[in-house]
Image (tube, rainbow, N blue to C red; front, top):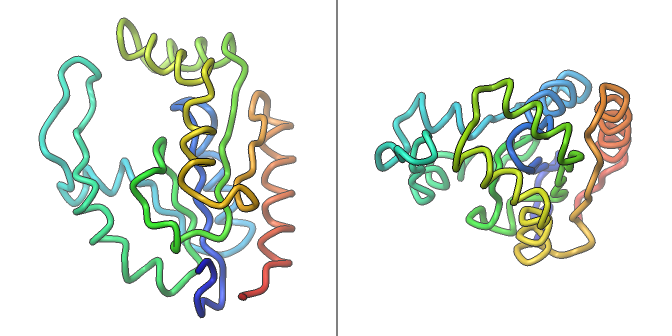
Length: 174
């Protein structure tokens, strides 16, 4: 059950790379005073991976090791998790699942400026076009905790942080 005895909620912020997850999470963490965990950084820092994917130029994360690393922190509550996938995290961990979405032309420019090209760029744009992460979130968590938010501009990010801060401040454990 979500909230299972936690004093503060856990939030998962997911979305295609380049949708503003880390920026949103950092600002939300500052606004609420809770811990922001960037799973990609955690994987690199703690070696929670099974090697390197040459085609997509990224680590192959070991989902079991990531979940083992996060388990105790998640039980305590007050955690914002930032990752571009969501289907391997236990449902009980989260009280709110946010899927950030970005217009494809804006996303293309953001990813290109990060050096994404070839299959990595195409795959991520296609994921956004087909709303893969929104569908993954809806299939993995109760629909009433899944929120899709547009994240095209600085104003969108600010509005999203305000909305999520209000949700956080009004949250009550079950």
